[in-house]
Length: 158
Image (tube, rainbow, N blue to C red; front, side, top):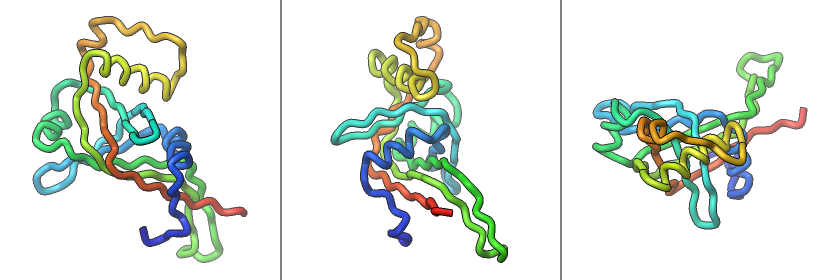
């Protein structure tokens, strides 16, 4: 990372940034150009692992790209605030972001239900979610096992 002064290295701080993000962008390998998709997500963090969960249709471009190559990159950001200046080229933006890469797989059974709960908890914490068998059958749940993650932040004391 070029701007070491903006780097976030503490995993607990990276997790706070993730928790503040609403959307995660996944980048897939797709022949000549990357294919990027913004998705809602949930996550789990343990001492030695971080996993991101996504849901969607069980078929389509995203799923066919995963079949060809399950290695993906991701990015998410939040806390945007424009900082104006007298000089146009001196404008900047406060932000927090994380990016990284890993391997994505479709999960089933208990792991699928766990993934759905994790996604729901991200946006609307409840004690119990009543997923119908039909709803569970109709959705694909993807788990991204994170291999590398970096964080970056610019917060000015203005």
